[in-house]
Image 1 (cartoon, one colour):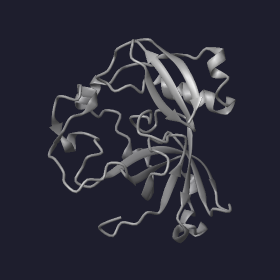
Image 2 (image 1 turned 135 degrees about the vertical axis):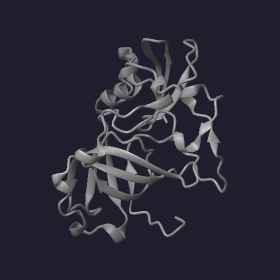
Image 3 (image 1 turned 90 degrees about the vertical axis):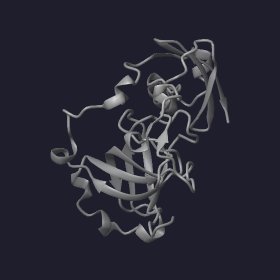
Length: 226
């Protein structure tokens, strides 16, 4: 990376493309694995981390790196037509392509063939995303329940009911089915798209998932191996 920042780890999970990745961290219970680069496979670097239930991940938008930046962007939740200041959004198109996510630390395995490995849930990162730092989450300073959400309050509310017919569900390994249903229940469609006739396709864990959705129900129409 530029500016002296070092990639300390990469994340491994079932999200192989941007479409379908949770819009924010903490929305799902899906578990991701954080594997460190050789220089940082030092058990002493993780001493004390086991006492924290949540951590911050600082990472690079590796699929959205640009040489130039714009002071305004078009947030999808506003229909993709309204411009807002880049610093009022979480758009990946920023002066520096850095993301910040709060995730739950499920467990730490210090002695594996890959060195120390972290297992976290609630990550909103694509598979292979480079991580540039990890910091502990401290509720007494990092949590602000009274905070205002600004224009982000326009986010779709509630979850969709997910319907996967049995003959389609059997195409997916059982261990992936629960995770898929959770992802789909949060409605992965862009905020400005709501046509119930449109068929969407997303990648998940080596499979292509096709579905339609209305305001209350998301129906999976096809599952095929990628």
